[in-house]
Each structure stands twice: as structure tokens, then as C-alpha cells.
Length: 495
Ligand code: BES
Ligand code: MN
Ligand code: ZN
Image 1: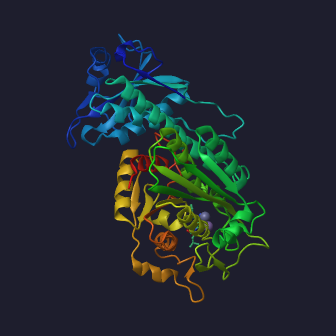
Image 2 (image 1 turned 90 degrees about the horizontal axis):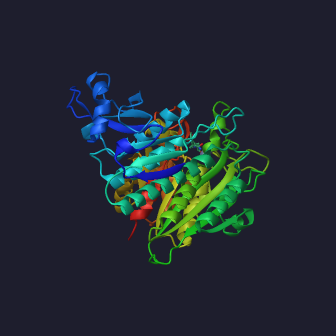
Image 3 (image 1 turned 30 degrees about the vertical axis):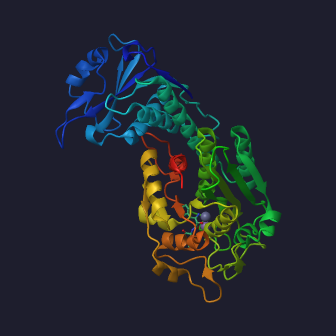
């Protein structure tokens, strides 16, 4: 999708559709709608419909007018943005996505969106562009009658300093495209997204954006003594991949180094502790954590913050076979800790344990992992919030700011020492499954053992990486959750 800026008066912009935001200025139950534009031509063109009482300003309400008087636009779209006092960049991002999704099926291929008068211009422009890209993604890749309903171009009508607004637009495009890159990876089924293919896709991207790249197979995993990772990978005929990407700009200090560790289970059958058939097809998205890290690295490479970032992706299938690990087996992790395998379906924490250890060995001073780790986080937080765990307050605070900036929802869950009792083993240092109660916390407690004293965040995105329903602003399917927050975090990251 092309992104363009216009500083022309909105009435002068020639476009298939000019979209303007309508906000409800009233308090509580009182509705008091107004168009977010002081332009007299727009006021004139909207006067009748605004007076009719048909427009309530409710969030995602759409009112489409044809041939608006005295405007060069062919259509005028009024976008409800909800209550003015609750209207932030988050709502605007989603409105832009909703606009794309509203116009696409009508065969409209380009539109213009007027930055609301009350919004901070650069923040608004960036959010609009991000949201438009998110809304432009559809997951129906393999439909033979696929109608390519992509929006071809968006024009953002802005005001203010041209260079700064252009920069905001470019940033929005980089982030939006990177989120969609992640979604493309997650959308692929496991026969078309093996660990090897994931590594190749990451390699191609890394070359395009100038990231250092390495990918290794089983030999290196064994050489590094990644017994936890290999324990999962050993059961599969499909070779695993240990993928590394480094962003090391010349102008960045030697420290800190942010380590991004992704769970890349390209298909999770559960292994010998096999999952029920019902819904198992969804386990193709068990590499969404890895994909989020890869997408974030793409954006980071293009946005060029002055900080070092290393990504480690542990990619493998989790399969039952004659070679597969079995409940009761003991694996020795790279860190030297012994792990009793209680449930082979708790495989994500095994691959991440060695990924975290390796990231520390490579010199990462701060760690973030992302994983579709537990069904329990879905029970706890549903499809709305992703879970975040932290062993470091400062890092959590920074991440919390980043999620606000990015408009993504994360909810912090605890890591009290008492939960450690749940992962004690009689025979080894630790078990890989702490049972049903507090399952998301038990998994995080397990990872905490491998982050050791390094400041660390764990993102459990099992409930949020795949949208079960279409929303006004985003199609059902892979969401690309965490990409934007990770990027905002990295951009602000310093010691
Ligand atoms: N990949 C799953 C978690 C998952 C569940 C992701 C639902 C997305 C949607 C993970 O590997 C898993 O199987 N976890 C088990 C852990 C249990 C055996 C301790 C779970 O959550 O049931
Ligand atoms: Mn599993
Ligand atoms: Zn899994």
C-alpha cells in the first residue's frame, strides 16, 4: 500500500473517499456530535446529515455520503470515534484499520483520511498509517477464488511541520508492514512453515534490511548442549533451526544489549502427551512468538534506534515418534539444570529455556521472550489481554509505556516465589509442568530459572496471537501481537 501525505485543504483533495472523524463531545448519556474539522467546506457538506440525528459518533460507526457538495472527493465518510474525552491514538489507529476494512469490499482502492483537529499531528499520522496497514491484511492466502481486495493507497491529510510529519508517516509504514510480515509468517500452515522455511524467510528479510544473520541445525544445538531444545526437536523428522539475528549499529553503546527470544514451534501436536484432535489445526500458530521477534527485528533495522538488539529464535516441531522424548525423561538444559519431562506438551518452555540461556551467553543484558506458551493464559485473560511477567520493575515500567504507545493490551501476572513449589521435581532440579492451577505462572516460573539474574520479561501471547473473530479494524487470523510494543520498547531502550 502506498502512503502519501497531503497538506492541502481537505476540500481540495481529489480522492475516491475522504474520511473524517466524528466525536461525541457530550458527557455521559448526552450525545453531542461534531466533525473533527474546522474546514468550512466540510462543515457545509456534513451539515444536513449531522443535523439529522442519524450520526451518533459511536466508535466504528460509518456514514457514507456520495458526491459531497463543494468537495473534490467522490465520497465523504464520517467515522465515529466515540466519546471525545476517551479518544486517543489507539482509537485512531483502529479507526484507520476499520476504514480500510469498510472501503475494501466496496471496490474502493484509495482514500484519504483527515487527521482529527484535536489530535497531536505526528502521533496521529503514525497511528493512522499503522492501523491502515493492519486493516489491509487478509488471511485468505490459499483461496482459489481469492478476491484481491487490497487497498492500494492511503493519503493522510495533515498539518504542521512537513519533515516531521513525513517521518511519522514513514515510521508508521515500517511498523505496520513489519506487523503484517509477522502475520504472514504465522498464517502459513506447518507444511509450508517448517523451521527451515522460517529460517529462510528470516534470512531473506535480514539481508533486505541489513541485519546480521545466522541459522544452525541439530549439530549446533547439540554442540551448544541445548538439551532442553533438542529434547523437543529429537522427535521430529523435520530439522530444527536455531536462528540468530543481530542489529548492531555503529553509533550504539556496547551495553545494553536487548535479547529477544522467540518460541518457534511450527507445529505443536503435544508430542507423546498428544493433544486432542479437536482444534489441533490451530497449533500451526505456535511459532507466533518467533514471528513477532522476527517482525520486530525488521522494524528495528529500518527505524535504526541507537541500541543493540539480538534475536534468538528456537524453531522446531513438537511431534510424537519413535525418537520423541517421553514423560519421565530427564533432559539437561544448556545452563546445566536438569529437567524432568512430566508432559511433552509443555515444550515451549523447554526451547525457550535454552534460548534464554544462549542469549545471556551471547552478552544480552536484558531479555524479552514471546511465546504462545500456555492455554492457562487464555483461561486467565481471554482473547483481550496478553500476559506479561517481569523479574525487574524498571523493565516492566518501560514495557508498560511501550504498550501504551503501541496500543496493545498486556496484563501483568505474578511471579511469587511460592509458585516455585509447583515446579519442584523429586529426581531432577525442576519439572517442565506444574499442573493445571496457575498454569501460566508455573510456565513463567520455569523460564525465570533460566533468565536467572538478567532483567527479563516474558510475554505469553497464546490468547492474543490469533483472532477468533473479525473486528472492525482487523481480520480474524494472525494478529501480529507484540510487534508494535517490542519496537516501541527497543526505540526507547537505554541503560
Ligand atoms: N502451544 C501450547 C499453548 C497454547 C494453547 C497455545 C492454546 C495457543 C493456544 C503449549 O505448548 C502447551 O501445550 N501448553 C500446555 C502446557 C501444559 C501441558 C502444562 C497447556 O497450556 O495446556
Ligand atoms: Mn504444547
Ligand atoms: Zn506449544
